[in-house]
Structure formats: structure tokens, C-alpha cells
Length: 402
Ligand code: CAA
Ligand code: NAD
Image (tube, rainbow, N blue to C red; front, side, top):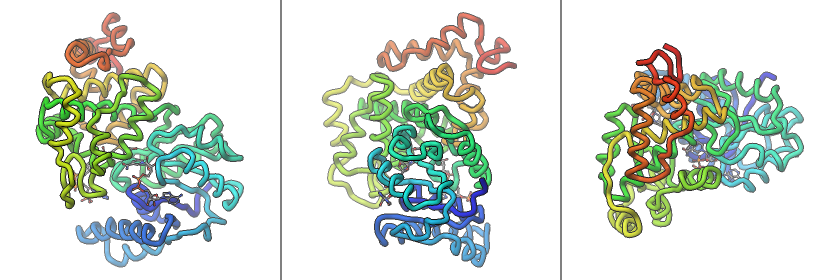
């Protein structure tokens, strides 16, 4: 099916970015939110993204006007009677999303594709509320949507192959890299990213290192931004929701750091409201130090910090996902580079494991387990690979062949 017109629902951080991506590809899009103020904010974000390009000489003002003419704001469903795809980017709550899609089913044409940009809610659960689950799919963009190349394409249990193919082609037409991912909590990228981010929060709350030291260690490793800066960009509230879903699915190894909930309670939600791990344009009521003191009383004393403390759990979760068939080794690496900026020269977490040695990964995980607990328990496949001589580059075979 060719997509001639799209709608994006939710004009917040993600929705506005996705609407810009759609218009950039030359397609008309409706950007809908609950009230005019939110719609206007979303439209202003789209304009700001284009204005930045104009200011850098990457497009002319008249080209910007042409692109802006493709996006129209809405607070109701007028204009939805001929949309080919709806991309939902609203509040992360399954029943709120279900209600929205039920309403959309009554308004949109028979063949409309219903895509959710959910960070971690099961696509099958959202689809269970509608009449045509074959049309429902996960289409997961990464923040900032105009920049990050990845789109995770996540079929639910009832999604048809036709819908999957259409969304893969549509994502390519948006100049994105679509990667098909088997449905699981956190899908692929958040499942690997969250243990890495959470470990940064745990190290901070233990007093193992300062926020700046943690972020610097990871940018020195080659990540495009530090993990605590990234938490602030994603939003502490969104991160807590994702963490809870991961904990529900994967148990104790995915227990969220207490500092996250303390930040949320103190209304330090990140860049979007002026303060999170860092302070932006708002002076928060409670300082980060006070919050750390509060949660630190209950947590273990500092046991050291290194970038490996964050990278190893990411590799471990990559291997567990590989074992489960969530995606191929190749796709796991591409997804982490295109979705999070994992350093290209390291080739993604599994190529990196091969580079440093799968045996080294195993001994690092064992030592982290000793020092910090069972959340670092090595994936069975890592042990099997070491026993079988699949040590990575140095033995000519690992996650990849050399
Ligand atoms: N919107 C639009 N464009 C943006 C932008 C935004 N919010 N932020 C940055 N850009 C653009 C800049 O304008 C710049 O464009 P040009 O190349 O045309 O000049 C380009 O991105 C690079 O930006 P900067 O030079 O300002 O800064 P940078 O090189 O440090 O890149 C970054 C910024 C792209 C955000 C980079 O730091 C990065 O890749 N960070 C990692 C982001 C990440 O991991 N995202 C995934 C989060 S998880 C998620 O989204 C899933 C979920 O469900 C929670
Ligand atoms: P946000 O809070 O910035 O924006 C959500 C917007 O949706 C708000 O403007 C709100 O008014 C609007 N909204 C809520 N209910 C609505 C409804 N019924 N109809 C129309 N509009 C409605 O949130 P966000 O960070 O953009 O996240 C949106 C979705 O994208 C969530 O599912 C989130 O998990 C997912 N996501 C977030 C990120 C991220 O980094 N923030 C990345 C990928 C995916």
C-alpha cells in the first residue's frame, strides 16, 4: 500500500519530531493533540527544527515554508477520513492508547495502518482492543526523531505481513533504517539501553562517581552523550515507565535505581521541565545531592566505577536477546548504532565483544557480579561460546566470523 497522507497523534517531544521527519520526506501530515496550546507547541517545534537547518544554510527559507505547508495542526479528527497511516505518540499508558485506537477505528478508512511509537508497551496488548489487529504495529522512533536513523518495526501477534512490509517501506521512504524486532518488553534497543542507563543511576546514588565523572567516562568510551544526560533528554518519567515494564518482564536484574523515582517525585523530569539529573533553566526545589542522600541511606556503599560497569550489562542483554531470537547479531549492532549512537568504530555491542574477546566479557561480568550482585549474571550463551572457543576476533569466530 502506498502512503499518501499520515497523521501523528501527540505533539510532544516525539510526535513533533516524527511530524518533521514525515514532512521532510514530502508527505502531508496532520499533527493532533488534546488542545490548541499543545498543537501550537508541536508546530513551533517542527518550525524550529527547519529554522535550524535554514540558519545553517542547509535549506532556504522558501523550502522551509514548503515543508511547513505540509503539516497541519488539529485538536479533533477532521481530516482523518483519508489518512493511510496514524502514528501515535501520546502518553505511555496502555488503556489510554487502546481508547485512542478504538476511536480511530471508527473514523479512519478500512485500510489505515495504526502504528504506535510506544517505548515498551506490548503491541499485542494495544491491538487486543481493536477490531483489526492485523493493521496494528509498533513503529518505534528514537529521540531526537529527526536525527536518529533507526525505526524499530515491531509486529504484534496479529499483525499481518502486509502491514509489516508497508511500514518497512514507509520507514525507508522517511530515510530511516527499519529493523524488524520480535515483540518483547523494551523491544530491542530499550531492553539493551536501560540496563546501561540504570547502572549509571545506581553508580551515582551509591556515590561511586559524580554525574559528570559518569557521563565523561562514557563519552570517552565513544557514546555521543553521557547516560545521565541521555536520561534527562528521554525524560525521567518515560524512563521510569520503561524500567517498570522491564522489571515486570525480566525480574530483579531490571530493578530501577531508586534515584529515578526520587527525581520523578521531586518533579525533576529532565530537559522538558528544566531539571533532571542536571539543572537546566529551572531551579528545582530539591537538589540532586539531597535526593542522593535520601536514597543512599538505603543502598550499598560505593564499590567503584568504570565505563565497563555500564557497557557489560548492555552486551549481556544483547546476548540474552540474541538467544531469544529478538533480532540477529547483525541487526542488534546496527540498531544500537542507529538508535543510540553506539560508536561506529566499535561496530555495536556484539562486534565490540568480539573485539575485546568474549572470554574477557565473561570475566568482566563475573567480577562485576562479585562486586555488585547477580544482575551481572552472564548469559548462558557467553559461557558456551567461551567453552567452545568462540572468543571473538582473536580466535577467528565469535558473534561474527573473521
Ligand atoms: N531535534 C532536531 N535536530 C536535533 C536535535 C533535536 N532535538 N538535537 C540535535 N539535533 C541536530 C542538530 O541540529 C545537528 O544537526 P546538523 O548535523 O544538521 O548540524 C545534529 O543533530 C547534531 O547535533 P549537535 O551538533 O547539537 O550535537 P551532537 O553531535 O552531540 O548530537 C545527538 C546530538 C544527536 C542528540 C547525539 O548526542 C546523540 O546521538 N545522542 C544519543 C541519543 C540517543 O541515544 N537516543 C535514543 C534514546 S532512547 C529512545 O529514544 C527510545 C525510547 O523509547 C525512550
Ligand atoms: P510527551 O509528554 O512529550 O508528549 C505527549 C503528548 O501527547 C503531549 O503533548 C500530550 O498532550 C499528548 N496527548 C496525550 N494524550 C493524548 C490523546 N489522547 N490525544 C492526543 N494527544 C494526546 O511524550 P513523548 O516523550 O513524546 O512520548 C510519547 C510516546 O513516545 C510515549 O509512548 C513514549 O513512551 C514514546 N517514546 C518516547 C521517547 C522519548 O525519548 N521521550 C522515545 C521513543 C518513544
